[in-house]
Amino acid sequence: MLGMPISTWFEARPFAAVSFQVRMVNNKQIKRKFLGSLLGVALGDAIGASWEGHRTAAKHEIELIARISHPLRYTDDTHMTIGMAESLIECHGFDGKHMAERFIDNYSKEPWRGYGPGPPRVFGLIKSGMAWDEAAGHIYRGGSFGNGAAMRIAPVGLFFWNDHARLREVAYLSSRITHSHVLGMEGAALQAMAIALAVAENPAMPLSSQSFLSRLINFATEDVYRTKIAQFSTLLGQPEDRQEVVNRLGHGIEAFNSIPTAIFAFLAHPQDFVSTVIYAVSLGGDTDTIASMAGAIAGAYLGIDGLPSQWLGQLENRDYISNLADRLWQAAPGQR
Figure 1 (cartoon, one colour):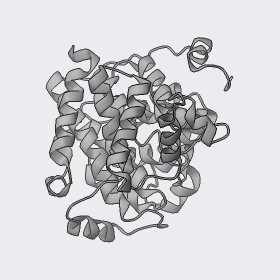
Figure 2 (cartoon, rainbow, N blue to C red; figure 1 turned 120 degrees about the vertical axis):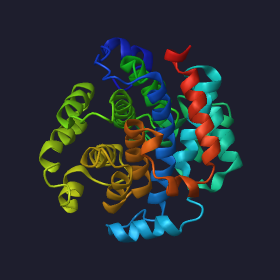
Figure 3 (tube, one colour; figure 1 turned 90 degrees about the vertical axis):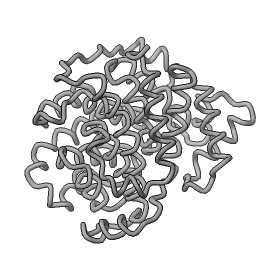
Figure 4 (cartoon, rainbow, N blue to C red; figure 1 turned 120 degrees about the horizontal axis):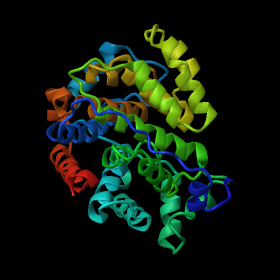
């Protein structure tokens, strides 16, 4: 199955759209959720960047570094998120060739953002004439299952927040630019789904973590993700046992060892953006990406009003990201 064309794969394994009731979230709130999510990506990324590779970090240490960092500078996680949003806006939807070219153009302008070795090699093959959805397979035999596709997926979760079938399809397709292993693509789809579910929730009402988890398990298709999500209920009763959380969910660069962790960080502190991000960073490991993904979900749930003004004031390129979120909201299918 992994060798068949992606369009055939979707025909062979159709996914019904997941329907759910939007709990009194109006259009103005949704716009503010778009803002919260994209800025949440950048804040989580920037806060976590100082701690990448650490085993664990204390809350007061993370808060101190965040407070004295001027500016809060983001990494390739946010840089590629920006490229994805720019492409969705310009094309009024997904265009793989255009998105790949946007990634390449942005990388050429700011290659110092902390890119790993894989994407630049993929970009080089695409620039040499290889198809946008074939280059990654030539770099990684069988495709990469890292979290690089999930870290940038927030614009897809926002753009298709009320169309889960299309969300999955575009998450998979966009992942193929750099991460073509099914676990990498599924991880991106799961992260996008978590963002979509968060958009649909009214933060003024209590969040049902069990309902949220049930929807994620029903959406997930790969056992490794379903198994980890199924452990959330137990872990939510002991979130301060960070070592147990890391042992069960992971904190590495693999998609299946980071996306469940990011979702868990949000569910452990759904009403507090700062606590979500600091908790994600405190788990150690791939802190910038896990905190960025957790920030994307928390921002999509709480909206821009739930993000800390001090951190926003320190964030580099904040105005451009805010404008991008506004344009993404305007271009989304429900707004046309």
